[in-house]
Length: 206
Image (cartoon, rainbow, N blue to C red; front, side, top):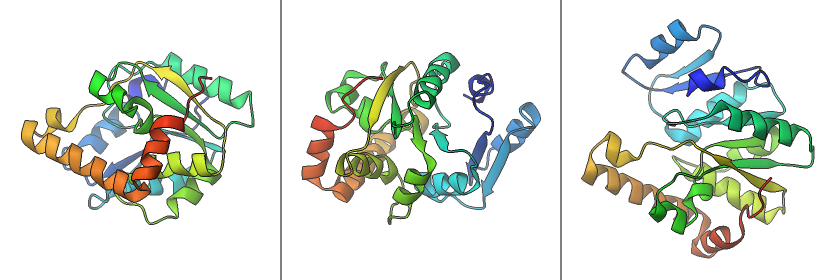
């Protein structure tokens, strides 16, 4: 993923948050990409906590969020999203839609609702992160904020694919953690708001 991102001239700051990893990832990044800033958490604090750490250091007006385990990412798609967004200052967020997501993900619009590829105004993201969020709730909380406040949100296509938990940690444990995470996120916004997100959130392509 980093090999693609470093090719984008419009990105002038890259921050990697090492959320308590033990496999030497940070050392590999330092060796291959010495100009990238690395923040290391002593222990795993979850996705929301990792994002908070990165946003505190970020200097730009916009923040581009990217999951570390993305596959098949194409830097040209991100570059196009950046240029289109910067040309229209009224855009609050652009979600990079995972066009190659499996059918079971697309049926519930997970290719947009839980996509971690998001270009968002930093001041808005900081406001959202002030809520009592945990683990993977940040995407659903962001979706809800945008709906409630009628913000301009668009999607653009992305070839990137995430790595499912059942691939990383085993079939049974992976599915259990995926389902647990979804239940946790839906319970945070409530069933009614979740249905609203499925129906109304981010329907316009940029």
